[in-house]
Image (cartoon, helix red, strand yellow):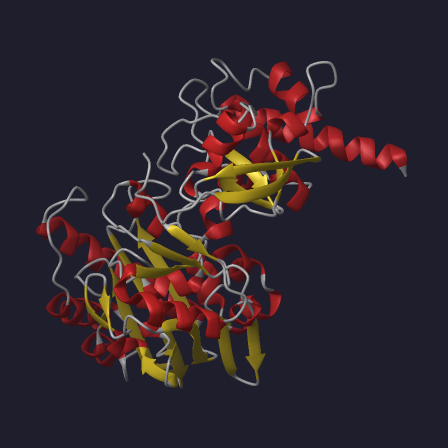
Length: 284
Length: 164
């Protein structure tokens, strides 16, 4: 499969990216690892006359842990995320999730920024970032602005990012307590039939806080505030988990596709969330 | 509009320069411009791993990388790992343990396994299976591929110990 022709740019800094985006408008797209965009271009579902490769921009590559604030540059790959010692200690849910994305080769190329920015409902990082209440940093001609991950997604492939903006990093407070990223997929490399990101803190034997987000069960990731609330103050017993699952099922809106009909997806979502809560609570 | 690009890359220790369209995929540039036909086109959709090469130290599916992205890169294909008269330990091991049948996936398997053992010299069976999950074989059922890689790891480790 051969994509439509394009002009290729590899700017050295973000200013160069913004200048190209301003010049070419929506005829231009930035590319991080390319493992979502290139398949779309090969299928000619995406036509990009001006392709801007971000690989040379050092400023987008770092992972910083400053006190309890974690910042991940857009060009950090899933492979780097998994193998970063400090990060595995500070926010282990990230590597747990990243290890369930695609396969080793794809993880060497696929980036955190691309996974978040693309707006594919099947991507795992968006739900995870909502669970962690991350802030997404965008750079545009007027400078940078921050958007909460919980506010970022509008519809499939549609986000709050403007055409002349580029996602440069994501930032969140280091999570505390127990965590779990649980994902059901048909095979290696597949997107989730259902996935759940859960962070739980415990105080005096009861749930103090709980944050729950679901992946690929709607056209956007779903942070279910009600599901988290259903756990708070409980001992995370079977009844509380049932209430959390019921609340989550009220927030998702899956559609039928080759991963199964709606009823099956709702069933899997409940099982996956129960497993994720159980594991997060065990670790809290 | 859409000019050809001047591409420079080092493949298996040898410098190459050629003109290519930015949209040319790395796999086709390697096979058709440089006549390096070890990496195979299997699925052409980044699933099967037959096109796996090493680009600047990363295992990459070369069907999902534009040649423009690899401009300036150092690339290793299966041709850079062993030669017919001087096989790499992994290649010997695949032969010894019947890690291939038709052989179509083998260049990708060997290239990926080389990188896997570089990063984890002493993998468990589970780690081998997880690390090779991006490479598909339709003949062997994987048992013998895993066996081959584990045997190669232990042989490489004994050789390392003997050298010390």
